[in-house]
Image (cartoon, rainbow, N blue to C red):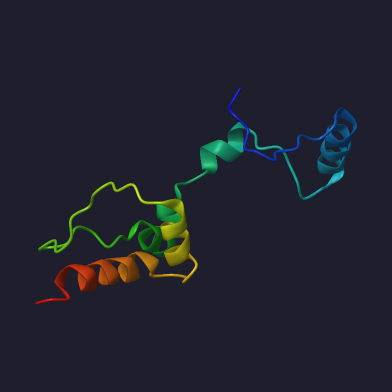
Length: 104
C-alpha cells in the first residue's frame, strides 16, 4: 500500500458505499470496459498541441553562467529572503554579490 500524505482522510465504509452507489446510479458514469480501452488513443494523438505545450521545457543553457550547489544556511536567514516573495534566490545572490564585491 502506498504511503499516504499527511492529513489524508480515507472515507468510512459507509461513505465509500454511498460514493460507489451514486456512481453506479449515474447514467453518464459508465464502467471502462475492454471495448473502451481498445478504442482509446494516446493524448498525443487526440490533443497534440496540449501535449506539446506540456512537454516544452526551457532546456539547458547554451553557456551556463551559474553553478548549482548545495548550501546550508540558518533558517531565519532563508525565511527572511523567502518572505520577500518570488525571486528570493536571485535577491539572495545579489545581496551576497554586494557583500563580496563592495570594496572593488
